Length: 173
Image (tube, rainbow, N blue to C red; front, top):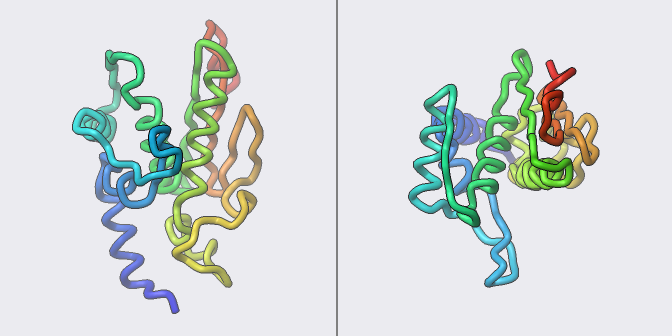
């Protein structure tokens, strides 16, 4: 039996934390090459700072060194935003990479994170006849369409992969 009151409380906790740190820490896993397995996505202090900045600012420019986990942090943050987006006001995210392959890698990370959220995060209509605490058993539950260049979620959100260039955002509404 699903306790909808506790799920509403948990949804409120996720929704009200604009940094999305709570959702990332409690619902997402990432691959740890040293352990060769998926582990809880425990953010480092600077990753937490980045999430707080992303959640509270409209325009963010950052400089960083390589291999700091920023791409994975962005993917986690974006997946949280997409999962919590209002279907009446869906969001579109444009992933631009130096090459299409790099943009597609980012799209793949976001997709992997989206598939980790329990069904209740997506809404009551997604859990009918299913375990509300489990992630989707297949991607068709939350994805309207999904390919190597674009993900369309059933809540209306889109994530698009493009290579950089002067026309990278052409045709994206």
